[in-house]
Image (cartoon, rainbow, N blue to C red; front, side, top):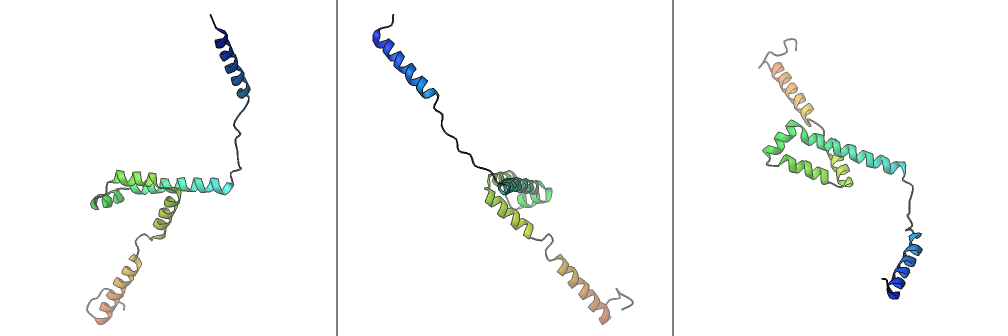
Length: 127
């Protein structure tokens, strides 16, 4: 059987639970701007492009030749912050592919023309 103290305890507990049942924590919401959503989507695209870059065969071979574990490199890219991903993506895009190749081709062509004019070679017979 329930004692008077036990009934009082149960009654007080029920009253406390019923009075606090209607109280809810207030949630705060703010509008998310289009720019913020676009930036987040852009960062994810950049992160995917970097992961794809690190999965290419030539990059894997170069990293392996330098003693870098490719799985570690991919994990590090996955753990980069959004700002770091944007910075790395920007730096990779700023580096021209085959930098200096045009200058090298022009130099070789100039040397061949000079050798032909000097009569050392006969590469361009109409010059």
